[in-house]
Image (cartoon, rainbow, N blue to C red; front, top):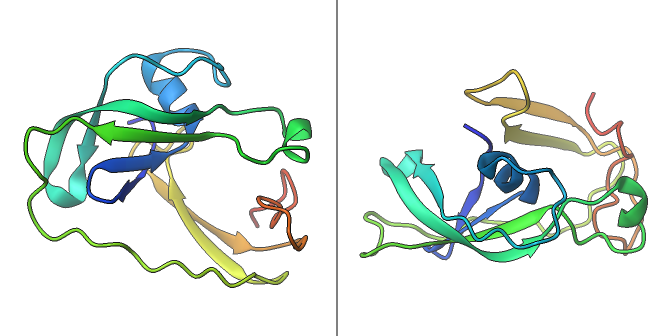
Length: 143
């Protein structure tokens, strides 16, 4: 297990670019779009060994570069399915309201040492209106 992602529109998975880099065994932050086919699991749909390719790529970058351009560490995978996924898959609700300092959050991921995943919770520490990705102080977002 290298990471987690979100199923979008029934055919795409949104994940972090560093997760893909780790999965294919290359250095994090590699600029080139990965050409390797990935094998992923969709545990909530009881599907394993689903093939996917990279459809969009925004590599991980150093923190100092994010103030200039916060679009980073994003990968969109396209599932290479012969048939549609079974079951009902619908869009999730997204709260788009700005969050103020002190607002709680809950996240789930696979940091080193947690091969089956773990959740993290905390609170938003800083809010800068109009700047994407700036709702937490770098390196201090978890409490």
